[in-house]
Length: 163
Image (cartoon, rainbow, N blue to C red; front, side, top):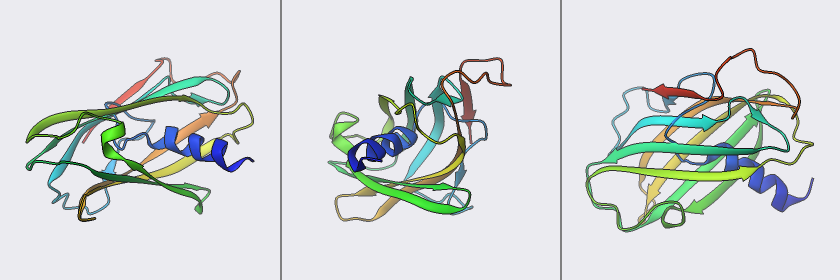
């Protein structure tokens, strides 16, 4: 699989989010179960759900912050069947307006996965870091990817989860 295409697939899985205004089949969890982060994720949205190979999908994360953010990075880690398959990093200000002032903000990203994306239940971890590389938040969630013509057992076109 071409590295750029694979990277785009994973970014879509992220997208994130980091962090997106709605989520996949399972709700997200904070990596640190105490969730003591300066950025709180309010919701994650993936639409449509499940994500279909070869079709466009939108990932959106709604969050709030306690401090001013002039920039930063978000990292995406993806695993399939417990095997780490990809990591990538993106500029926070490419997905939302910077600077981010204390309060609510959102990140959103749309992209199409290649039609040959392997179907399955992916584990995705999104980590947001500030300019000094300090961790601002970390969430993990499951993301179902199906073949483009596979029908979902879930009647809705999207799922929304909140912590």
